[in-house]
Length: 136
Image 1 (cartoon, rainbow, N blue to C red):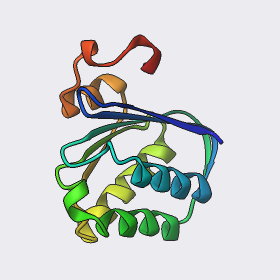
Image 2 (cartoon, one colour; image 1 turned 180 degrees about the horizontal axis):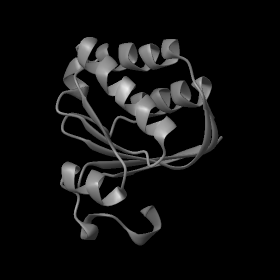
Image 3 (cartoon, rainbow, N blue to C red; image 1 turned 180 degrees about the vertical axis):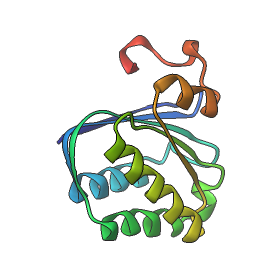
């Protein structure tokens, strides 16, 4: 399982990390776990860290499945902002493609790719004091 997530309920921030070889199954499982976590709802800010990813083995079909999954509960994901830290060209390009797919698919959340953690945090409005050191 090359992924983890932690939800900071007091500030409604979800921090998700992927590392190693990320597959379609990993992405779908993560979407399922988030859907089952009833603490997560409208207005959540998600910081996705792909800095440890070495390889991505995911299909566009799996990306579509994640988008369809979120679209089934539009009120829950309304105002959901996802900032993805993707420093290398492959993960950055895939994230931009995913963001475009969410726009075209009329998904309730907004996704944006960033090269650095600082840029993603700034866009999400996350202050350094909002996350515990163990989440960085």
